[in-house]
Length: 338
Image (cartoon, rainbow, N blue to C red; front, side, top):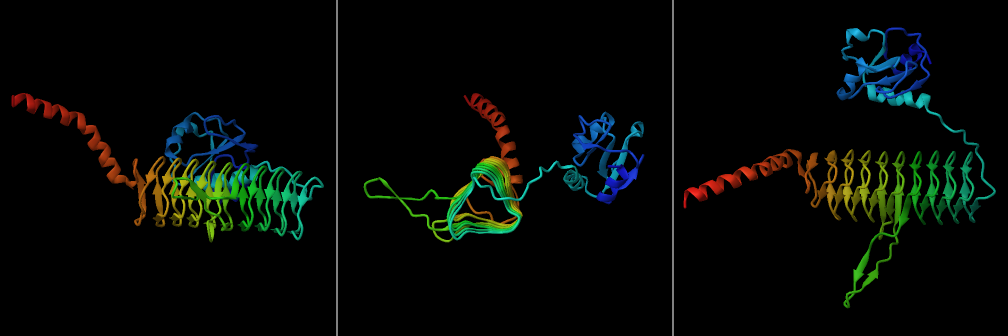
């Protein structure tokens, strides 16, 4: 594509040769002169002077070093979102021929929409419903009474258990299990444990993406709910009866215990752990490896071994660093009082 065409797509303005041909998208550190790259994080601005990229997407107020007038620049309002949009144009999408493989298995009273792709060795149970233009890759299992909407992509080796409801435009990556039994056991008088029947379902709304090897447990009663626009990274555990609000994002290896309710537009860092039966309000950011042991009612950033407002956590870190000095002062006081 010519730089001029790219600028038109991104609604940007060009400084330099607008007829330069771009053949790919690259990292600013390793791009060739036929690549386009971008700078959105100031940390990467230092690479502008040494990059081999032919063109760079920058913010409208980015200051271009005079010694690199050879680089074509596209100025846009939001370089990161513009780069994402450009990636979609250059993305190598494999062609999927819409068909239902003869090596797949479709149960009784199951309704398939138009233009589906059902790959080899997919097993679909009885009384399921799958919307139009949904793609299901090999070795995936849908148990009975599963409902999947339109334009969904279910990758290989996914298990979707009985009664699960999935909306439109949902992406589920390989190895994920949705609707398995929650971790529920009642203690008997003799110290043994009796399994609590898990008779609820999982409901996933529109425009959700779920990474690989995640586990989302069915509810004991009612539903485990993943609201529209939620994005889950890989290897995340969502326990029974959890509710995750709209447009919340959760990074890898986080775990959320049963019946906790998370609000809208939250951001949860990797390896965070949230105990059960809590309520977390909208617009909360929880740092990586943070343990959340009580409900959060105020929006903000929470960090620390036990979740607390970031300013308080930073103060605690400062106080901890002062402990050796306090120890020395106490030792001197004790020596002077002898």
